[in-house]
Image 1 (cartoon, rainbow, N blue to C red):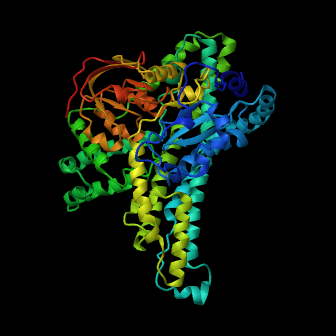
Image 2: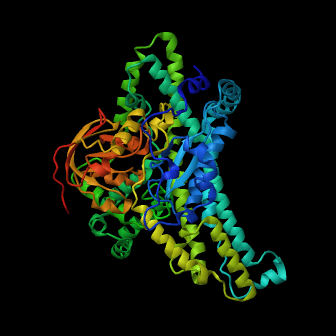
Image 3: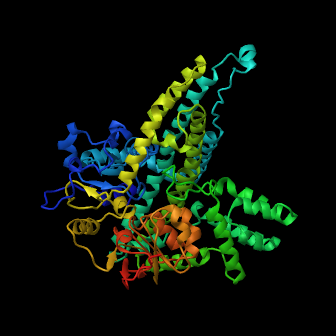
Length: 629
């Protein structure tokens, strides 16, 4: 079976049908008290428009809480728009995936909802299939070469953002401009630099999706082939056949482990263990050759491996390791303790690969000889492309966006200096178009030698938007809007977001006031069983509360949380399917995990004893006691 045939046979878009039950109509959602006027925080294309009610109310909208679990800041929305644009244009215009287009996207009370666009009819799919075969085939045949070239392009974009210069707006233009250059002034350069930043932010998402959906397409071909040959096989077993592949998302944690070993080798482990801040490290280690050698190793690891967001990377508020070293420093100290206990800190890659190969051989032995070449080819391609499915996340969401948010802060510092607002973080309460307005205001005032009007205009708007944001943040958004879908069969919706007919049924039951059982169901994300006290973590800044032996319960986990995985016995997430980051990371670290439970964080309390069964996809609350602390 070709990839094109596999995609055409395995993907269908959910279509809603009449049902007595339904999710809230998007046009009937009420505004939380205190959030009146929230709409002004987002551009018109982000909102449900009254003139489209008949069309949009007839569609099912799923909340994208996997990537955007929090309220979107006005400026941050530019990256949300970019992400969906990149996915849509790659599917629809670049590779012409036969059955799939992009997604419609809307904001409701600050939260992101999406709806699949109708699938092309059979004749259109056949026409698109011809385009897809040539375009995707070229990439699959030249994957390694094209991927290496992609790495160069995305790294150039990252370095380009980092190198962007925000003009100082000095009292006089440099004399060289008069005597030699006679080019744009600093005011011209300021606006051009802001536009260039937005261009980088826009274009990075096409790079983000360039290989991603092809990677999923190859994996889906292998999954479909396995399901045809082995009808009883589960998704976890199939994913296990492509596991044990080293990916960049594990590299930052590997760097911390290496720094722990180096501290012990140099005899400075005690000083590193005692540190809680970067200043503690420099003060304690800067006076000796061994200490200086360790600090040099730390600096070498930072770029790029500490450009690792504490969250998804999609929010400016989720700072990265490079901005706040508290988690890496704590993790290095814990790894030193584990080394002193005689533990081996290397990831069990060889064991995972041996287990993977054993599973593959078991299923190959069940195939007829004529089916083996097709199976081997599909498996080989899936393993070739699989690293990219995770690697893009480090390059774009973490490394690129850390630089993007920090460069935006440089523009804000200049505007702070000129009295537009007092806090550097305030820029994120403006839409991207509004930031351009502020820059033009500054251009005009600086050029004329006057005073910009921004300081008289923006502070009260920002203050009100902070109040609105707080009110939206306290609101509990529904998981879906509109009619109940007849089916959910699009594989990425299932594997990545964890949305299945069973998921939809759980949402409806909870909406109707049911679902208070002590057992939660989700996806068997990573095999194994573990019991322990729960630790509910709703935001990245709560990670330091996680204690040894606890089970992490979170809306969604981030790859940058992997150092915490050394403390926990298992993981539970509200969101995600078999191919989400939480599931992949848990499998590679051999931790049992159940993902896509829907209501884990709202049902489980910190301190309750729970059992995580990563074999069956169930989480059981074993007692009602919760640690009030």
